[in-house]
Length: 125
Image (cartoon, rainbow, N blue to C red; front, side, top):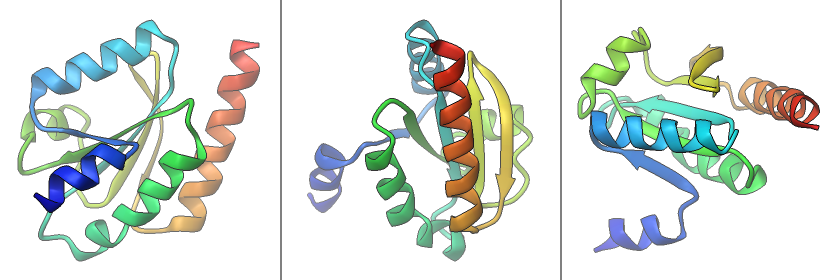
């Protein structure tokens, strides 16, 4: 029950299958929406610790699609993007990876996403 409550107010979309991954990425591409993906694992403490921060980022950037992928639940996506450590953050535009950051480093993640969002806005304008 608690999980459902979190999902209704969450701006982060949980990817639970290859199909949902393809759906969200295709939808974002069609809308020209940039994507930030948090590859996580329930057993990885630094990854779990980043969840509230990732939620905060999602609220800060409403024009960006924030996805979270548990590498144990959706192994195919993790291996396709060559995710080998958690947490890994991948920034994507038009279905292609444009940046990647491995590790729980909130300041660096915020800086990279900020730069990414500004470059996308300039690109769109």
